[in-house]
Picture (tube, one colour):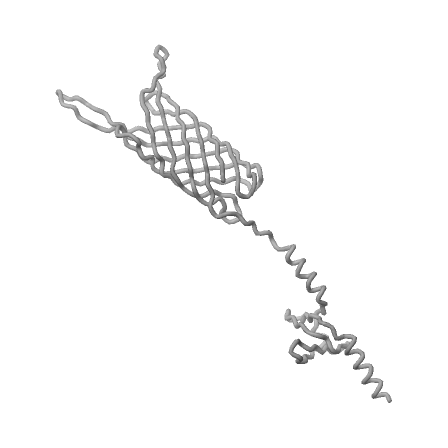
Length: 256
């Protein structure tokens, strides 16, 4: 009679515990199946194929229900760092205006338009790295007080350039730094272009992950050679004189 009672109790306990669980072992392994029996010493699990596995209770770290496993997975997903999805390529449009200076020559003014293509994101930073073309125009004026201002020299360049633009902080409003380097191709036969380098320092506003605007102060150094003519004993000789042109002013930037 006692054996029959124990058998009935065992079967009842088996049916009471027969529901899907995930057994978390102290080794870190997880076993998913149906618990057919457990007490203070042992846990018996049947997997989906019908095989039974027995584990000492001391080796079991925890027993999770399907709802607890789902809740655990949701918690992990919520705590996972957000991955920013942004486009790989970006367009940078820059428009600048300011003054120009040539040592031992007249002062002047200049303006420029640059269109650059590159990446607006490096790692998790909004850093623009790319290159492109543009137009740089520099006009030197006669600055004598007793004369009407007039253009004495004019330089037009097609810059082929590399550019780096980066904010100091990853915030919506941040100070920004820029660097440019390239070669200014002369657009006239009266002079020859040369290498140039530029620096920017100002402000940038990140409107959204893909778009930003900025206003910066720039300084640019451009090399050039100007064609000159020397007459010696009635003979005209053609030469080129070096020009180092320094430009500075304000620039508006748009990242798309």
